[in-house]
Length: 300
Image 1 (cartoon, rainbow, N blue to C red):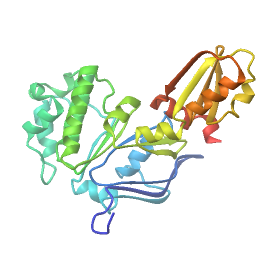
Image 2: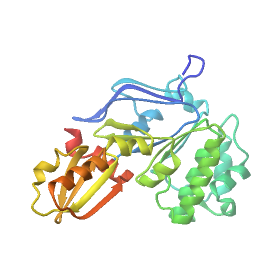
Image 3: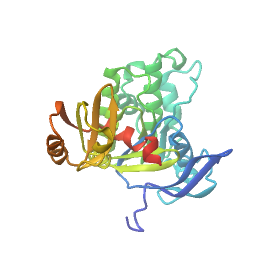
């Protein structure tokens, strides 16, 4: 990035503690304008704290957080940021259309209300009261409120929670359309397939630190690109970790699972050890990679 084009999001050595726990532990992260980035992590990994710091809802103990080269509060006040958070109360006696119009009016250059409702897939709910919606409908209203100001950066915290399969597909279709207009999107999710399908990059947080940053394919390779499994007989399970390409070994219910960077070399070495029964070779899934990257062994 040049000095004329600041990063959309920049964390530099950012730390935030609660009591004796470092919820965010010295992370460094840069997101370019126009990127779509997924934030993954187990419960308690630091995702919500990182989002709070990004939105100016919390202050770092040390390090910095910037949005478009400015402090988060300044970018938020300027209308450059829209956010969809998990915690929000329904406003009583207000219709969806009225609420979206009110929020849009707080921004300097909002989208037309009808366009916002269309993008969020809730045009038919415009006259419905917000406090009488289902959980999935309420989630889509939150998305509409995040879009209302036509922000340059859209921050979505677990955006498809409470949505059924059809609504999730409609949501991601809207999000991709918004991103294609050059907007930056940062979203957290527990659905790994969503991160793989809809993000340019995936950032994995664990214990307050970034443990991986790359595309889904890069994360799978980093955690061992393939899985070789077979029925374990008399083979020495300890010796399996020394086979070519093997990154990790797991024995479960009579089967050995080898995470390997070179499945061909691993299988040939296994063949030299003797008969291998019920052999299976498969590419590692993003679930496999996530579990490997956030395992206690990886942390150690």
